[in-house]
Every structure is written in C-alpha cells, then in structure tokens.
Length: 59
Image (cartoon, rainbow, N blue to C red; front, top):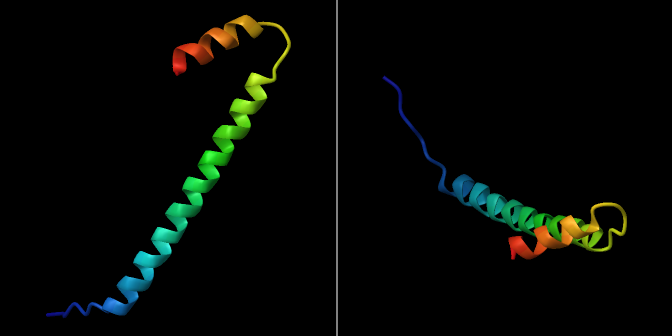
C-alpha cells in the first residue's frame, strides 16, 4: 500500500509558474501576429491584390 502526499505549496508554485508562462506566451503570440500582419500589409510584389482581398475576408 502506498500513500499520496500533496504539497499545496508546490502546487501553488506550479500554478503561479504556469500563469506566468501563459501570460508570456500570450504576449509573444500577439507580437508575432502583429509582425506577420505588418509584413503582409507592406508587401508590394506579385499577388498584392490577392493578399488585400484575403485580409478583408479575414476581418
């Protein structure tokens, strides 16, 4: 027979760490999305019209 020991302080630390990581990933995701959107919106080569139409369709 074995016993399960739960350390609530360790669970709290893990929960706080997960929250910080989630916030960091949210920040990273938003900046990555903005960087990609900016690069696409400043594109000036072939197929520019297709990109503009697709951007409008995504909104």
